[in-house]
Length: 539
Ligand code: C2O
Image (cartoon, rainbow, N blue to C red):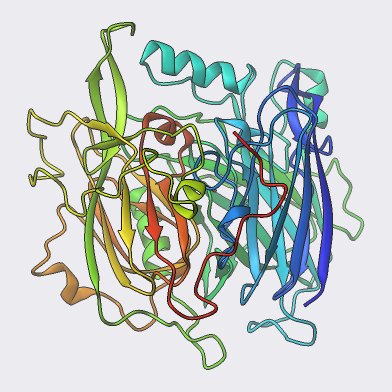
């Protein structure tokens, strides 16, 4: 492959949304940030320059970073942040990957405004494995907008122990769509122009902080061909479900009468405990031929917020393409079988408003961020930064989706789980109902995994595995653990380093729903973590 150079200047810029103006942190003054284009096997070199007053890191979400964990980006996991006035060059290859991914800031809540698309085209001369070949491609980045400063929103929540405010709008490519009571916002919409009879590839990204989203286009069917930069068996649907951190590529054929059609992104939240921004973000698909921008728009009704059957049927239909050219390499044997409970809890807090605070945990561990990078501590054998005694099973087995036991106190710790190189891992993620069941989009850095099973209620090690799909399960990097249910994933630990696993709802990450794997080097020449680059940021 070739080498692609990018420069990301992290700068503040003012934007007006929902009738009010605020200054936000951006890359190159853009919201969303610039799209990074490359081809499979290319090397990408991005110089990130911090020209704002706060610390910055950038994560290349879904990029495998084989042996290059130093370029992964999560603050205090693989690197110390880039301090104001400093820069860092992220250098990595897109080995064996093609499709849509996203990049985003990975410190505090900065990714609210610091995010953008990664488009990895197939190698030159290699065609897409789906038909027809798209006439054009359109990147659609879904996100959330707060009227107030996002850092103030999470700071207030952490200090008070309460849940943070929900966003004030969802956005599509930075546009919230018209809102009432504000003339300037009538202009704030996105129009995607199409030619009748042509087929388009929509590359859809959910960059929202805290919400799963449904996505629909009025009057049109969507054919899913890829998720998280892995090809799928094509299937047609009128509604997509996409969690934060996930990407979905769909084909849309402009096969309707010339006109204007509404695009709608609306929230999915099936737990009654969860407050979400219930505003639907809209955009317009407009047929080019003699249709004016003032023509009536064909509308669509988004699914109800708690439409679990719509969400489940979408998730259950996804399958890997598993063709000769793109086989699904599902680990059939398991060396390490792990069960992680994921959920929320409450801990005492003397300084908090109600004398308690909401916390989140995995296997009763509320993860505490270190003050130096875990990957550095691992590589240089620095003791005292982390322990590798993260529990592989829940310390207290109970009826996870019923009412919780009274001793669901979590313990704080910077605890990692150690895996030997190439171990084949099965990880069951079990949602708990300690406060109340709630879905969690869990993201694993450094790997793709196969989603071999999913169910409601408690995972049963005796009966659940008999229904696993080990032939063509979908392969991805982020998976929604269903409300009051479980998801089983498998991966091979073939990438040495320290790899973050966390809920991609930023609020849950802030509350501690995170941990990391430490994966040992292998013994072969190409099985060790490379040394850190010379400009690696210091803490
Ligand atoms: Cu997209 Cu650790 O995140």
